[in-house]
Image 1: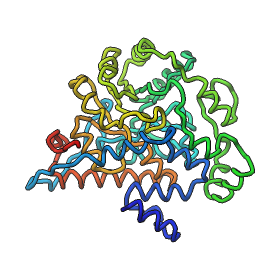
Image 2: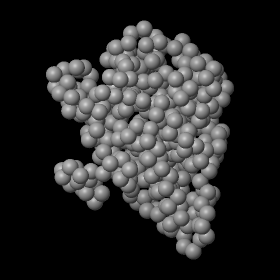
Image 3: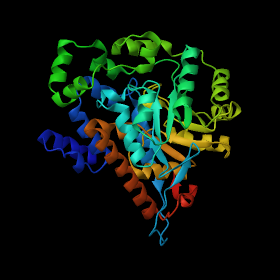
Image 4: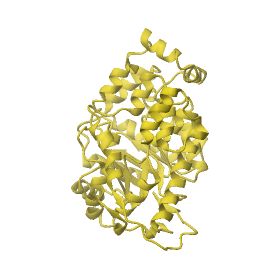
Length: 393
């Protein structure tokens, strides 16, 4: 019903401004209006037929909550620990690449917003601002997420830069041995550069275009560092060519040994892989299918969570990634054994809709919805959120 309402309001031209967006779906609709098609195709798209993209949220929606009645929920406590750091709530901003595409301040705006909300921020190696610049912009806790690159020297250099900058945790994405087949990205046409069609599309969104021009050339810093080339299309091709399909568990173990700190492995769905993650020294396991942008047809992350929880048996922190659009989704993930969840598109909708203020609005929506869901389900603390609270179809 909400999506139908949004579509009707968009047709009438009366979509609410940022402050009027009451949920993440409305933020997404506003973001879509403010982005040119080549960019919105990336934000909203997934791999191939986008089965897994939509499956992530549908699977969360299908889980039923069985509330506990007459519980004292006058005071709700959401503080917890993620990656060894105290945080205000059990969710954090997941590493997402190319954030400057959606707003000229990109990762800087998200990192500042996360710090203001007392939340962890994850920075992708495929970011459009350097890890040092993001660290300077925000004094909040941060994780840096590596990609499996062929150039091991570049990966080691990034790890040392993280250490020097004071990043609190390191992660590695393991579900990207090659790029997923995101056909919508191709149809959107951003990779074709400044074609006449794209120039028209950009001109139709002057706020976005002027902001990008004012903030200078768009680049991917790790590619610039390695090649000294400052062309965005060339940077993107470099990162794609660097993804290593031969990356192994031994390579992961080497990274853990070099880092010697909180380490998250992102992209685990199979229980056996969760066990191997423990063997190589991972302290956190992020159950994820890359937001449906890698293997289309992969299982929804939430459906894989119970198997991973059972395999890990309390020996590592477990985080759910994928499909979170409501505070009740966070509650469901915690009920099924996750210690926390990560959000990506939800805050990117806010970023595209209104920069740092938009991200703050997205995070506030999720926090308020989560607290409300706790109260309505009879949970005053995170410890009260137990497996008997939910039913899986």
